[in-house]
Image (cartoon, rainbow, N blue to C red; front, side, top):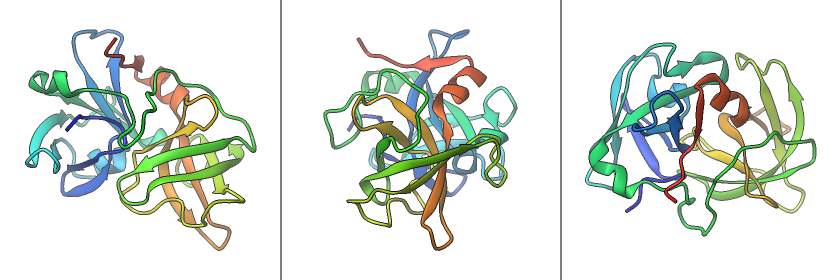
Length: 204
């Protein structure tokens, strides 16, 4: 079982989805998993990250603090135990897609994601906003015309929305569907990586 985007993780008693494996540019020998802050922290602070599909082993450690979390993007990093480095991959679970780069999206772009609960779903970017609730930068999402309205659920938080055509990482799923228009929201991956001075891990 690889440690890769789309798998279930648990931290501080909260279930969520692993988004990406990343490297902080100042620490090239370390590896981090990226997920939502409300998954890794959830108001509880530092904690071990468990992977239920590997005997509920502790695979990473989240340390509370601004160096490893950003409330405005609802994003956080947890340092992965080196013994698990051979299992690391940015190939999305259940697919042949490997996430290698990030990009900014555009309205009406079709996105796909693999979440812990709803698995493979798709949506469309509706618009961008400076604020979405308590998010500092929101990619507002809407149902795909040929998809299903329920394209995300609790537990999908932390999963990565990728451009269907290019496979590039666009947004970190941060807010579920709210209201009668089935909108949800993600934080821009490019901004998150810049904030953490990080890049997407490649096993090549």
